[in-house]
Image 1 (cartoon, rainbow, N blue to C red):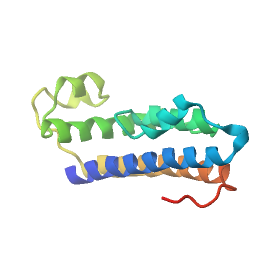
Image 2: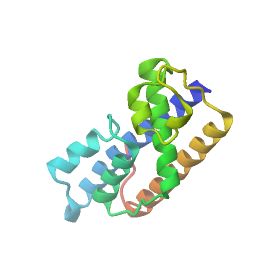
Image 3: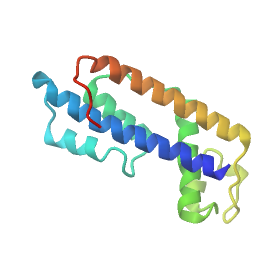
Length: 151
């Protein structure tokens, strides 16, 4: 199960990084909507150490697309990220950061190994796919006249 958690977050990171590159490419083709150096920098680093909610905010602010999500989706994605970070950085051992930020912290104690249930993985997968769908389609429609993206 833990491998699935890491894979889900990794797929999101790949998607949002490629989306940032695509937005730079497409916006540069629209002379009336050129990007500022600050926006280009944000998009170039969009996949690096930012919460998913912030990544979506950057894409929304830059492109004008509406990417709002229910609070339950945001909480599920935050939990996915926190659990993934436990796996990558703490060998699945619950730390203070997790306990301070997780809405699920009451179920875990400091130093316990954070296991993952099938229900959690299914929820995180649904939420991740919902976010990808709700970002990808508006981007595709927004930049439908852009030339083929070379990457």
